[in-house]
Amino acid sequence: MEHVFWNIGHKLILPNIIKGEGCYLYDDKNQKYVDMESGVWCTIPIFSLTIYKIIVKFTFFIETLEIEMEIKLGTLHDGINEINLEASAGELGLEKDEEMAQSFPEKISAGIEVQKLSDRYYVKTKLFTTAYFLCDRCLENFNQNLKCSFRLYYLKSVEEKADESNYRFLPGNAHEIDLTEDVKENLLLAVPMKKLCKESCKGLCTNCGANLNKKKCSCKQEKIDPRWEKLSRIL
Image 1 (cartoon, rainbow, N blue to C red):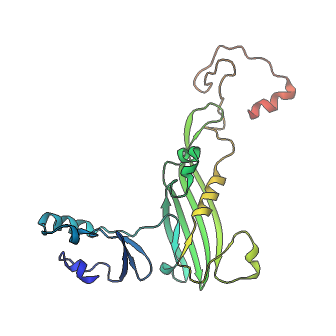
Image 2 (cartoon, helix red, strand yellow; image 1 turned 45 degrees about the vertical axis):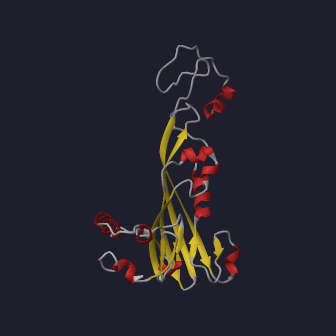
Image 3 (cartoon, rainbow, N blue to C red; image 1 turned 120 degrees about the vertical axis):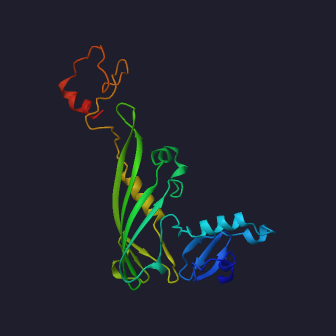
């Protein structure tokens, strides 16, 4: 690949590129990059100084792409590894559920700690995002920070404890750990069963429908049978 980079007159930035696929490049650790120069040489018959300047400018900003919620095993060293990943609701497959897609318009961030010991990987993941819901009492839109965490063990060999639910098996030739499904599952479990804009939400008037958080209505409140009072507080 060296001659490709040299064509525009700057030094070789990625010396360990071993293959290309479409507009992507891969290094010897199977890390993926965007090839900002892809197709330039075969689509421009006469070299342009303007094109040259644009290519030089943006080639220096090539960044590694993190594919959804995948951990590249080739980038890990023995001991503690810290990784930060992000994915959209669409990348997690949440766009199939319209309500969930609307609840998570922002990126889901994952702070991941991987402890590697030979072919064993102990993965601790902390998820964070801002979720948008409809209050079950007053029907107003609101947002809240949503946090959750989970731990998983990944093995390339069968062990006695491997029947536990937080263990995962990896094929011997595995190059990555895909956390997509586990992130999706834990994120959905973190969604509150009862969505309230605040614990003290007064809800709507059962007669006129006024939002009692914003104003008092003139409706006459009927007395509640004491036997049903606790039940009314739940609603």
